Amino acid sequence: MKKIIIQALVSLVALSANAEYSLKISRGKFPEGVSTQSLNGFKPDSLAYKKVALGQGWAGGDYGKRLNVALSPSFMKTGETCENALTLPMLKIEEGEWLSWEACAVYPIFKETYTVEYRESESDVWVTVGEFKESGNDWKGRLLDLSPCYGKEVEIRFVCRSPKGYMLALSKVAIKPLQPLTFECSNLTPKFFALSELEEGEAIAHFSLTNLGSSVSGIVVGLSIDDEVISQVEENEEWKPGESRIFDLPLPLKLNQRSDYKIILMSDDATNLTLGQSFAYCTSFKRHLLVDKGTGMWCNNCPTGTLAIDELEKEYGDALIGIETHYDDLLADEVNFKWLNFYAIPYMMLNRVRTSAGEGSDKFVDYICRPTEMEIVINTLVENEDGTLTVHATVNTSEDFTDSDRTFRIGYEVTKSFSGNESNMFYQKNICNIASFKQYYYLPSRMLYNLCYFPNVSLPSPLANDTENIAFTGIKYSLPATLEAGSSYECTWDIPMPTGYTNFSGMRVVAYVLDAATQEIVNSVAISVDDYAEVKFQESSNPRPTSNQIYTIDGSKLKVAPQTGIYIQNGKKIIR
Image 1 (cartoon, rainbow, N blue to C red):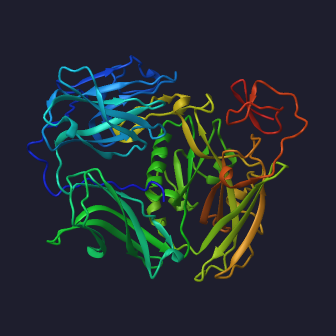
Image 2 (image 1 turned 45 degrees about the horizontal axis):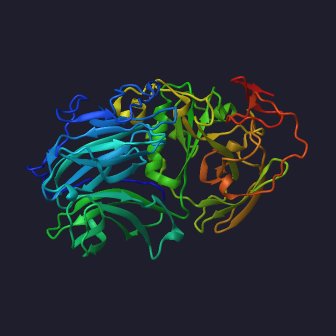
Image 3 (image 1 turned 120 degrees about the vertical axis):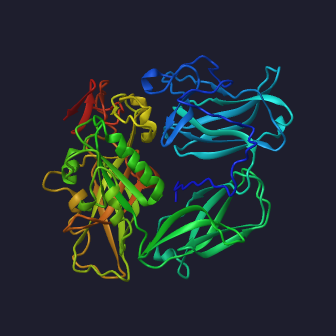
C-alpha cells in the first residue's frame, strides 16, 4: 500500500510557556529580526505564480487550511537553481532546546530540498546541521538537535535549493524544549482486504509512529474498535526524538463488514490518546475502486477535480484506479466522453455507478464498502510485431458468488500520463483563488506547460464508436453466459494501437469485469505495459521518409511518415 497517510500531532501537555522562540508571520509579513534573501540573485519565473511575492527568497502566505506560513518560490524554466534563505534573529540556544517545524512541497509533482544552517555571532561561516527533502503536499513534522549550538548566540536559517522545484512551505517553526508524548502517525494499512489475506479472522494493521517529543520508554501502542482495545504492544526500549518505529498489530475483520478502528496511545488511567483513525473492509476478493474523471485543459474549475483525485489516492492508495478522460482539447477522447454521459466538467463517477456521478467524490460514500465476489488478474502482456498488445487474464468467482443469473464481460481501457516537460502544447486553465485549493492557489490562471501534469489519460481506441465501445459494453463472449461459484475463467484478447500512437511505451492497461446490463464495474486491475510486457515488436526494415514537422499526440517527433491517426503539425491537431 503506497502513501496512505493520516497524520496526527498530539501532546498530553500544553506547550511550555518558556518556549525560547516561535516564528510568527502576520498578514504575510515576517516579524522584525527575520530576514529573507536570494543568495545567488536568481528570481523565480513570474509567469509560474500568482498571489505570492517573488525575488526576496521567501514570502509569507497561505496554504491549504493554514494561514501565514513561510513560502520559498523557486520554479525556473532556465535550469538554474534558486538559493533562498530564511534567517531567524540572533538567539542564545539553551541546553535541551530543539528546532521543530512542519514542512511540505506545495506542488507535489516537484520535490523540495533544503538545509538548516547556523552561524555564530561575529562569524561569516555557516555550518549545515541538517539536510531535508519534501515530496508531498501534506504537512510533515521535523525535528533537529541543536546541541552543537548550546550556550552560543547563533543565527539559524533555512536555505531552499530545489532544482526543478516549485515552492517549499514551512509552518510552526519554533526553538524550544521538547514536550513529552508528541507523535506523528502515518497509517500504511490497506483499506481493503481479501478473505484469503486474513489469518484466523485477522488482518494486519501496518503503521509508523514518529516521536516528535522528548525521549520516552515503556509506552503502550494499541488498536481499538468502539473504544475496546483489540491489540496492543509495549515499547520498553528508549524511543528517541525524531525516531520512527513501524508497528504491525492484529486487526480482526468480518466478511463484508466495515471496521472503524483507532491507533491509540494507552495510559495507566485508561485515558487513551488517539493518534490516528481509519477503517478496513474485508470481502471475498480485494476491492478496487475505478474512478472516471471528465476534464479538459480549457476548464477553469478542473483543477478541483485533480485535487479530489489526489485526496482519494492518499486515502485508498493502490486500491484506487483513476482514469482521466479529456474533452475538446489536445488529449481528447471524445467517444469515451460521450459514453460517460457527463454533462459538465469536472465530473467524476465511481465504478461506472451512475448514481455516484457528480462534480466531486461526495456521492461515492454509499458505494465504497460493497461485497466483491469477483476479481480479474492480468497474467501476461505481449507486444506483437503487428503493433497490437495481447492480454491474457483470469477472472475468479468466490465461493459465495450468487449472481449466476447476470451476464458479465471483460472491458478495458489504455491510459497514459502526460507531463508538460514532454510537450509545450499543454496548458491548464485555473481559477482556484482560495487558499484551501492548495497548490492551485498559487498556480497562474493559465498554467505554463512546464507545470502541467495529466495522469492516466484515456487514449482513443480505433474500435470505439457511438454504438459500440468495449470500454463500456465489454468484449462479447469474453466470459461464459453463466458463471459458477468458486471458479476461474481465462480470457485472451488483442488491443490495437491507440489512435495517434506508434508504440505502447509509457501506457497502462486497465481491465475490469462489467455487468453487461448496467455497465457497472464489479472489480478492476491496472498494470503498466513497460513494467510487465514481453516485447516481440521489431521496427520495420523499410522506413519511410522522415518528417521534421509532424509529432505524435504526446509530443514525440515522428521518425517515419504518419499512418492513419491523430497527430500534431505546426502546433495544430490533424487527423489522417
